[in-house]
Image (tube, helix red, strand yellow):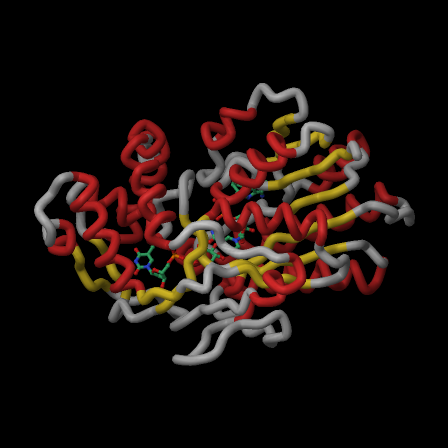
Length: 349
Ligand code: NAD
Ligand code: DAU
Protein backbone atom coordinates (compact mmCIF):
# COMPACT_ATOMS: atom_id res chain seq x y z
CA UNK A 1 0.00 0.00 0.00
CA UNK A 2 1.45 3.40 -0.90
CA UNK A 3 1.47 6.18 1.69
CA UNK A 4 3.14 9.43 2.61
CA UNK A 5 5.09 8.90 5.83
CA UNK A 6 6.62 11.82 7.71
CA UNK A 7 9.57 10.89 9.94
CA UNK A 8 10.80 13.73 12.15
CA UNK A 9 14.36 13.87 13.50
CA UNK A 10 15.60 11.54 10.76
CA UNK A 11 19.06 13.11 10.65
CA UNK A 12 19.66 12.29 14.31
CA UNK A 13 20.91 9.11 15.96
CA UNK A 14 17.84 6.83 16.16
CA UNK A 15 15.94 8.65 13.41
CA UNK A 16 18.67 7.92 10.85
CA UNK A 17 18.36 4.18 11.48
CA UNK A 18 14.56 4.39 11.19
CA UNK A 19 14.84 6.36 7.92
CA UNK A 20 17.26 3.81 6.43
CA UNK A 21 15.07 0.86 7.39
CA UNK A 22 11.84 2.41 6.04
CA UNK A 23 13.36 3.75 2.80
CA UNK A 24 14.95 0.37 2.02
CA UNK A 25 12.11 -1.92 3.17
CA UNK A 26 9.10 0.04 1.90
CA UNK A 27 9.75 1.27 -1.65
CA UNK A 28 6.04 2.05 -2.06
CA UNK A 29 6.06 4.53 0.82
CA UNK A 30 7.14 8.12 0.18
CA UNK A 31 9.36 8.87 3.17
CA UNK A 32 9.78 12.53 4.19
CA UNK A 33 12.56 13.29 6.66
CA UNK A 34 11.83 16.53 8.54
CA UNK A 35 14.79 17.75 10.54
CA UNK A 36 16.05 21.16 11.69
CA UNK A 37 19.68 19.94 11.60
CA UNK A 38 20.48 21.13 15.12
CA UNK A 39 23.92 20.24 16.54
CA UNK A 40 22.61 16.63 16.81
CA UNK A 41 21.31 16.36 13.24
CA UNK A 42 23.72 15.33 10.50
CA UNK A 43 22.83 14.45 6.90
CA UNK A 44 25.95 12.25 6.77
CA UNK A 45 23.90 9.81 8.87
CA UNK A 46 21.50 9.17 5.98
CA UNK A 47 23.76 9.78 2.98
CA UNK A 48 23.34 6.18 1.74
CA UNK A 49 19.61 6.73 1.08
CA UNK A 50 19.76 10.39 0.04
CA UNK A 51 19.24 9.61 -3.66
CA UNK A 52 16.52 6.97 -3.21
CA UNK A 53 13.39 7.75 -5.27
CA UNK A 54 11.09 7.29 -2.24
CA UNK A 55 13.05 9.68 0.01
CA UNK A 56 12.77 13.45 0.48
CA UNK A 57 14.64 15.56 3.01
CA UNK A 58 12.95 18.70 4.32
CA UNK A 59 14.89 21.08 6.51
CA UNK A 60 12.54 22.76 8.97
CA UNK A 61 11.78 23.36 12.61
CA UNK A 62 8.83 21.76 14.40
CA UNK A 63 8.69 24.83 16.66
CA UNK A 64 7.62 26.91 13.62
CA UNK A 65 3.84 26.49 13.54
CA UNK A 66 3.31 28.17 10.14
CA UNK A 67 5.98 26.06 8.51
CA UNK A 68 4.56 22.84 10.05
CA UNK A 69 1.00 23.68 8.95
CA UNK A 70 2.03 24.40 5.37
CA UNK A 71 4.13 21.22 5.15
CA UNK A 72 1.18 19.07 6.27
CA UNK A 73 -1.17 20.88 3.85
CA UNK A 74 1.23 20.27 0.97
CA UNK A 75 1.78 16.54 1.54
CA UNK A 76 -1.32 15.26 3.43
CA UNK A 77 0.73 12.73 5.39
CA UNK A 78 -0.94 9.38 6.13
CA UNK A 79 1.36 8.70 9.06
CA UNK A 80 3.85 10.48 11.26
CA UNK A 81 6.72 8.82 13.14
CA UNK A 82 7.89 11.51 15.52
CA UNK A 83 11.46 11.35 16.82
CA UNK A 84 12.64 14.97 16.63
CA UNK A 85 13.56 16.16 20.09
CA UNK A 86 16.14 17.72 22.29
CA UNK A 87 17.49 14.49 23.77
CA UNK A 88 20.39 15.09 26.18
CA UNK A 89 19.67 15.21 29.93
CA UNK A 90 22.76 17.31 30.78
CA UNK A 91 21.75 19.98 28.26
CA UNK A 92 18.21 20.02 29.73
CA UNK A 93 19.70 20.81 33.15
CA UNK A 94 21.49 23.84 31.66
CA UNK A 95 18.62 25.06 29.43
CA UNK A 96 15.20 23.55 30.26
CA UNK A 97 13.18 25.94 28.06
CA UNK A 98 14.78 24.65 24.86
CA UNK A 99 13.32 21.26 25.79
CA UNK A 100 9.83 22.66 26.38
CA UNK A 101 9.93 24.47 23.05
CA UNK A 102 10.91 21.51 20.87
CA UNK A 103 9.60 18.53 22.82
CA UNK A 104 6.28 19.97 24.03
CA UNK A 105 5.32 22.86 21.72
CA UNK A 106 6.90 21.16 18.68
CA UNK A 107 4.97 17.94 19.34
CA UNK A 108 1.76 19.89 19.84
CA UNK A 109 2.34 21.70 16.51
CA UNK A 110 2.66 18.36 14.71
CA UNK A 111 -0.44 16.94 16.41
CA UNK A 112 -2.52 20.00 15.49
CA UNK A 113 -1.33 20.01 11.88
CA UNK A 114 -2.01 16.27 11.51
CA UNK A 115 -5.48 16.61 13.02
CA UNK A 116 -6.31 19.56 10.75
CA UNK A 117 -5.21 17.89 7.53
CA UNK A 118 -7.02 14.65 8.41
CA UNK A 119 -10.12 16.81 8.82
CA UNK A 120 -12.06 14.21 10.79
CA UNK A 121 -11.19 11.28 8.49
CA UNK A 122 -8.71 9.16 10.45
CA UNK A 123 -9.03 5.97 8.41
CA UNK A 124 -5.57 4.38 7.97
CA UNK A 125 -3.94 7.35 9.71
CA UNK A 126 -1.43 7.06 12.54
CA UNK A 127 0.64 9.37 14.73
CA UNK A 128 3.47 7.26 16.19
CA UNK A 129 5.26 9.06 19.02
CA UNK A 130 8.73 7.82 20.00
CA UNK A 131 9.37 8.33 23.70
CA UNK A 132 11.66 7.26 26.50
CA UNK A 133 11.69 5.18 29.68
CA UNK A 134 12.83 8.31 31.57
CA UNK A 135 9.18 9.43 31.85
CA UNK A 136 8.74 6.72 34.52
CA UNK A 137 11.37 8.23 36.84
CA UNK A 138 13.91 6.19 38.76
CA UNK A 139 13.78 2.62 40.11
CA UNK A 140 15.23 1.28 43.34
CA UNK A 141 17.36 -1.87 43.39
CA UNK A 142 14.51 -4.06 42.10
CA UNK A 143 11.51 -3.81 39.80
CA UNK A 144 10.97 -2.93 36.14
CA UNK A 145 9.05 -0.22 34.27
CA UNK A 146 5.88 -1.65 32.70
CA UNK A 147 3.42 0.13 30.43
CA UNK A 148 1.23 0.88 33.48
CA UNK A 149 3.98 2.36 35.67
CA UNK A 150 2.91 5.86 36.75
CA UNK A 151 4.79 8.75 35.17
CA UNK A 152 7.30 10.38 37.54
CA UNK A 153 9.80 12.34 35.41
CA UNK A 154 12.79 13.74 37.28
CA UNK A 155 14.86 15.80 34.82
CA UNK A 156 13.68 18.70 32.62
CA UNK A 157 14.28 16.41 29.60
CA UNK A 158 12.15 13.63 31.10
CA UNK A 159 9.43 16.11 32.13
CA UNK A 160 9.30 17.53 28.59
CA UNK A 161 9.01 14.02 27.09
CA UNK A 162 6.31 13.11 29.64
CA UNK A 163 4.39 16.27 28.70
CA UNK A 164 4.64 15.37 25.01
CA UNK A 165 3.35 11.84 25.72
CA UNK A 166 0.41 13.37 27.61
CA UNK A 167 -0.36 15.69 24.68
CA UNK A 168 -0.42 12.72 22.28
CA UNK A 169 -2.83 10.78 24.54
CA UNK A 170 -4.94 13.94 25.03
CA UNK A 171 -5.32 14.30 21.24
CA UNK A 172 -6.34 10.63 21.09
CA UNK A 173 -8.91 11.05 23.84
CA UNK A 174 -10.27 14.45 22.80
CA UNK A 175 -10.18 14.33 18.99
CA UNK A 176 -9.97 10.54 18.39
CA UNK A 177 -6.59 11.04 16.69
CA UNK A 178 -5.12 7.54 16.15
CA UNK A 179 -1.80 7.25 17.97
CA UNK A 180 0.74 4.78 19.33
CA UNK A 181 3.49 5.58 21.85
CA UNK A 182 6.61 3.54 22.55
CA UNK A 183 8.95 4.14 25.49
CA UNK A 184 12.46 2.83 24.99
CA UNK A 185 15.52 2.36 27.17
CA UNK A 186 19.07 3.64 26.43
CA UNK A 187 20.17 3.10 22.83
CA UNK A 188 23.72 2.70 21.54
CA UNK A 189 25.22 2.19 18.07
CA UNK A 190 26.48 4.06 15.00
CA UNK A 191 25.71 7.79 14.49
CA UNK A 192 25.33 8.44 18.24
CA UNK A 193 26.41 12.00 19.07
CA UNK A 194 29.50 11.89 21.34
CA UNK A 195 27.90 13.80 24.22
CA UNK A 196 26.21 10.59 25.42
CA UNK A 197 28.07 8.08 27.60
CA UNK A 198 29.06 5.33 25.12
CA UNK A 199 30.20 7.42 22.12
CA UNK A 200 31.79 10.03 24.41
CA UNK A 201 33.86 7.37 26.15
CA UNK A 202 34.81 5.59 22.90
CA UNK A 203 36.01 8.93 21.50
CA UNK A 204 37.91 9.78 24.69
CA UNK A 205 39.55 6.35 24.87
CA UNK A 206 40.68 6.78 21.24
CA UNK A 207 42.21 10.13 22.21
CA UNK A 208 43.56 8.87 25.56
CA UNK A 209 41.44 11.55 27.29
CA UNK A 210 39.85 11.38 30.76
CA UNK A 211 36.68 9.26 31.18
CA UNK A 212 34.42 11.37 33.45
CA UNK A 213 32.23 8.96 35.47
CA UNK A 214 29.48 10.83 37.35
CA UNK A 215 29.17 10.24 41.11
CA UNK A 216 29.93 6.71 42.32
CA UNK A 217 29.37 5.12 38.89
CA UNK A 218 26.73 2.77 40.32
CA UNK A 219 23.89 4.25 38.23
CA UNK A 220 22.22 1.58 36.13
CA UNK A 221 20.90 1.73 32.56
CA UNK A 222 19.28 -0.89 30.29
CA UNK A 223 21.10 -0.79 26.93
CA UNK A 224 19.58 -1.64 23.53
CA UNK A 225 21.30 -1.74 20.12
CA UNK A 226 19.81 1.09 18.02
CA UNK A 227 19.01 -1.15 15.03
CA UNK A 228 16.88 -3.30 17.33
CA UNK A 229 14.98 -0.18 18.39
CA UNK A 230 14.41 0.69 14.71
CA UNK A 231 13.12 -2.87 14.09
CA UNK A 232 10.75 -2.51 17.04
CA UNK A 233 9.42 0.81 15.68
CA UNK A 234 8.82 -0.85 12.29
CA UNK A 235 6.92 -3.71 13.91
CA UNK A 236 4.83 -1.49 16.19
CA UNK A 237 4.09 0.95 13.34
CA UNK A 238 2.69 -1.88 11.20
CA UNK A 239 1.24 -4.30 13.75
CA UNK A 240 0.77 -2.35 17.01
CA UNK A 241 -2.66 -1.60 18.45
CA UNK A 242 -3.82 1.97 17.92
CA UNK A 243 -4.15 3.85 21.23
CA UNK A 244 -1.66 1.53 22.93
CA UNK A 245 1.75 1.97 24.54
CA UNK A 246 4.72 -0.40 24.11
CA UNK A 247 7.85 -0.51 26.24
CA UNK A 248 11.07 -1.39 24.38
CA UNK A 249 14.22 -2.49 26.21
CA UNK A 250 17.26 -4.68 25.97
CA UNK A 251 16.80 -6.89 29.06
CA UNK A 252 20.38 -5.70 29.57
CA UNK A 253 21.19 -3.79 32.75
CA UNK A 254 24.67 -2.44 33.45
CA UNK A 255 26.06 -0.12 36.09
CA UNK A 256 27.94 2.70 34.40
CA UNK A 257 31.20 1.62 35.99
CA UNK A 258 30.93 -2.01 34.82
CA UNK A 259 30.02 -0.78 31.34
CA UNK A 260 32.98 1.60 31.25
CA UNK A 261 35.36 -1.22 32.30
CA UNK A 262 33.94 -3.44 29.53
CA UNK A 263 34.40 -0.61 26.99
CA UNK A 264 37.99 -0.08 28.18
CA UNK A 265 38.75 -3.81 27.80
CA UNK A 266 37.23 -4.03 24.29
CA UNK A 267 38.92 -0.81 23.17
CA UNK A 268 42.32 -1.97 24.45
CA UNK A 269 41.85 -5.14 22.35
CA UNK A 270 40.72 -3.23 19.23
CA UNK A 271 43.44 -0.58 19.47
CA UNK A 272 46.17 -3.11 20.26
CA UNK A 273 46.90 -1.49 23.62
CA UNK A 274 48.04 -3.36 26.72
CA UNK A 275 45.03 -4.49 28.85
CA UNK A 276 44.46 -1.95 31.65
CA UNK A 277 45.67 1.05 29.63
CA UNK A 278 42.24 2.64 29.02
CA UNK A 279 40.89 1.90 32.52
CA UNK A 280 43.60 4.24 33.89
CA UNK A 281 41.69 7.10 32.20
CA UNK A 282 38.65 6.66 34.48
CA UNK A 283 38.04 9.68 36.70
CA UNK A 284 35.14 10.10 39.16
CA UNK A 285 33.64 13.59 38.70
CA UNK A 286 30.82 15.66 40.22
CA UNK A 287 27.46 13.91 39.91
CA UNK A 288 24.69 14.95 37.49
CA UNK A 289 22.03 17.02 39.33
CA UNK A 290 18.95 14.91 40.17
CA UNK A 291 20.60 11.84 38.63
CA UNK A 292 18.14 8.92 38.17
CA UNK A 293 19.61 5.86 39.91
CA UNK A 294 18.27 3.01 37.83
CA UNK A 295 16.19 2.39 34.69
CA UNK A 296 15.06 -1.07 33.58
CA UNK A 297 12.34 -1.94 31.09
CA UNK A 298 9.92 -4.83 31.07
CA UNK A 299 9.54 -5.37 27.31
CA UNK A 300 7.49 -8.57 27.66
CA UNK A 301 4.30 -7.06 26.17
CA UNK A 302 6.12 -6.29 22.91
CA UNK A 303 7.62 -9.77 22.95
CA UNK A 304 4.33 -11.60 23.67
CA UNK A 305 2.05 -9.52 21.41
CA UNK A 306 4.31 -8.82 18.45
CA UNK A 307 7.14 -11.36 18.84
CA UNK A 308 9.93 -8.74 19.07
CA UNK A 309 13.23 -9.48 20.77
CA UNK A 310 16.71 -7.97 20.52
CA UNK A 311 18.72 -9.51 17.67
CA UNK A 312 22.24 -8.99 19.05
CA UNK A 313 23.87 -9.53 22.43
CA UNK A 314 25.41 -6.51 24.17
CA UNK A 315 28.93 -7.76 23.47
CA UNK A 316 28.13 -8.12 19.73
CA UNK A 317 26.41 -4.73 19.57
CA UNK A 318 29.24 -2.98 21.42
CA UNK A 319 31.88 -4.58 19.20
CA UNK A 320 29.98 -3.39 16.07
CA UNK A 321 29.64 0.07 17.59
CA UNK A 322 33.32 0.37 18.47
CA UNK A 323 34.29 -0.81 14.95
CA UNK A 324 32.01 1.85 13.46
CA UNK A 325 33.62 4.64 15.50
CA UNK A 326 37.10 3.38 14.62
CA UNK A 327 36.25 3.24 10.90
CA UNK A 328 34.47 6.61 10.86
CA UNK A 329 37.08 9.00 12.23
CA UNK A 330 36.02 11.66 9.71
CA UNK A 331 32.43 11.59 11.04
CA UNK A 332 33.78 12.01 14.58
CA UNK A 333 36.13 14.83 13.52
CA UNK A 334 33.27 16.67 11.82
CA UNK A 335 30.85 16.48 14.74
CA UNK A 336 33.45 17.23 17.41
CA UNK A 337 34.79 20.39 15.78
CA UNK A 338 33.28 23.85 16.35
CA UNK A 339 30.39 24.11 18.84
CA UNK A 340 31.13 20.70 20.40
CA UNK A 341 34.42 22.05 21.76
CA UNK A 342 32.61 24.87 23.62
CA UNK A 343 30.06 22.41 24.99
CA UNK A 344 32.79 20.05 26.18
CA UNK A 345 34.76 22.84 27.83
CA UNK A 346 31.69 24.15 29.70
CA UNK A 347 30.53 20.65 30.71
CA UNK A 348 33.80 19.02 31.76
CA UNK A 349 36.22 21.95 32.21
P1 NAD B 1 19.22 13.00 18.68
O1 NAD B 1 19.45 14.17 19.59
O2 NAD B 1 20.37 12.21 18.21
O3 NAD B 1 18.45 13.49 17.37
C1 NAD B 1 17.38 14.39 17.41
C2 NAD B 1 17.12 14.88 15.99
O4 NAD B 1 16.01 15.79 16.05
C3 NAD B 1 18.30 15.65 15.37
O5 NAD B 1 18.48 15.24 14.03
C4 NAD B 1 17.86 17.11 15.43
O6 NAD B 1 18.41 17.90 14.39
C5 NAD B 1 16.34 16.98 15.33
N1 NAD B 1 15.66 18.12 15.97
C6 NAD B 1 15.89 18.59 17.24
N2 NAD B 1 15.08 19.66 17.45
C7 NAD B 1 14.34 19.83 16.33
C8 NAD B 1 13.33 20.74 15.97
N3 NAD B 1 12.94 21.73 16.80
N4 NAD B 1 12.75 20.63 14.75
C9 NAD B 1 13.14 19.64 13.90
N5 NAD B 1 14.12 18.75 14.18
C10 NAD B 1 14.70 18.86 15.38
O7 NAD B 1 18.15 12.12 19.43
P2 NAD B 1 17.99 10.52 19.49
O8 NAD B 1 18.84 10.00 20.57
O9 NAD B 1 18.09 9.98 18.12
O10 NAD B 1 16.48 10.41 19.99
C11 NAD B 1 15.40 10.40 19.05
C12 NAD B 1 14.10 10.27 19.83
O11 NAD B 1 14.10 9.06 20.57
C13 NAD B 1 13.87 11.38 20.84
O12 NAD B 1 12.50 11.72 20.83
C14 NAD B 1 14.27 10.76 22.16
O13 NAD B 1 13.54 11.35 23.23
C15 NAD B 1 13.86 9.32 21.94
N6 NAD B 1 14.64 8.30 22.71
C16 NAD B 1 16.01 8.31 22.68
C17 NAD B 1 16.70 7.31 23.36
C18 NAD B 1 18.21 7.23 23.33
O14 NAD B 1 18.79 6.40 24.05
N7 NAD B 1 18.91 8.04 22.55
C19 NAD B 1 16.00 6.32 24.06
C20 NAD B 1 14.60 6.37 24.08
C21 NAD B 1 13.93 7.36 23.38
O1 DAU C 1 16.78 5.95 28.94
C1 DAU C 1 16.61 6.55 27.69
C2 DAU C 1 17.41 7.83 27.61
O2 DAU C 1 18.78 7.45 27.55
C3 DAU C 1 17.03 8.70 26.43
O3 DAU C 1 15.70 9.13 26.56
C4 DAU C 1 17.96 9.92 26.35
O4 DAU C 1 17.66 10.67 25.18
C5 DAU C 1 19.38 9.42 26.27
O5 DAU C 1 20.27 10.52 26.25
C6 DAU C 1 19.70 8.51 27.46
O6 DAU C 1 19.72 9.26 28.70
P1 DAU C 1 20.83 8.99 29.84
O7 DAU C 1 20.93 10.20 30.67
O8 DAU C 1 20.60 7.70 30.52
O9 DAU C 1 22.12 8.79 28.89
P2 DAU C 1 23.62 9.38 28.97
O10 DAU C 1 24.38 8.70 27.89
O11 DAU C 1 23.64 10.86 29.03
O12 DAU C 1 24.12 8.83 30.38
C7 DAU C 1 24.12 7.42 30.66
C8 DAU C 1 24.61 7.27 32.09
O13 DAU C 1 26.01 7.63 32.15
C9 DAU C 1 23.92 8.17 33.10
O14 DAU C 1 23.81 7.49 34.35
C10 DAU C 1 24.89 9.35 33.27
C11 DAU C 1 26.24 8.70 33.07
N1 DAU C 1 27.28 9.59 32.48
C12 DAU C 1 27.00 10.24 31.33
C13 DAU C 1 27.93 11.08 30.74
C14 DAU C 1 27.60 11.83 29.47
C15 DAU C 1 28.54 9.68 33.08
O15 DAU C 1 28.80 9.06 34.12
N2 DAU C 1 29.47 10.52 32.48
C16 DAU C 1 29.21 11.23 31.36
O16 DAU C 1 30.10 11.99 30.90
